[in-house]
Length: 333
Image (cartoon, rainbow, N blue to C red; front, top):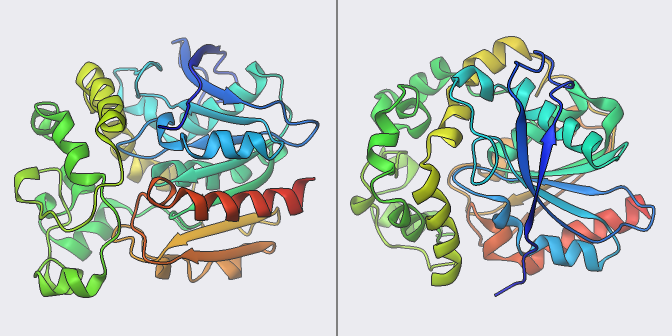
């Protein structure tokens, strides 16, 4: 199993939140490797339901390549602060946490790398904090506007058939998922599956599949190969058995507020170095969603890792690391 550095707790000022500090001290548990040698540090932003540990394959590789690699458990996760109020998980606070973390680490600018929900956060950084961004990398998550609940209902109809809609009512998803956190990861930590295979099983998008695996995990078919060892799944299960899923789910409960408050995110052109790593068989964020990025990102490189699914940085870490390190070395040496 890949060595992953222990966490160091950083207390954040909250001064960088566009909505103000909010009166409550926030701390993040941060994992770090490497010294960077004058290159911009690389900050990794995880998604849902994940942890900083999801970057366990990237931190050592990026540090060995000569960069300072930093991965926090973000607000609402694991050992980091998890405020009660849903409004404490808006995009302004999530991006403000990363800016505050740079202050705490005495870093002026960084390259931000994000996957899944973390991708939305890092793509918002050059809009909200352009002076703190040397570059942005999206893994699976493209630079695009937030999908609001109205749009999702127009696509999926029944709220229970789309996990982001099912997440909206406080307590509903938690009541299901908190009962068996280990099963969440046993079922979902699997590799990519050819869409043709999904169609043959009657669970492809064109077959009207439910896009909510969390509601009834027992009914999720075992089609992909496990991409995490029992020990790695233990790490996820232990964290969510202790905290529950509420903190991460609260990120989703702000998607309409985020779209209203930050309409420039996903629409305003970006002129800093950007890299988009797509995953060919990602059912949640297929490469087609990144089709418009060339019109918005003036300095864009885009590539697709073949035959991989949503957790590509864990499924095929060698390919992701090679692509990431090649880009970092060319652009920031």
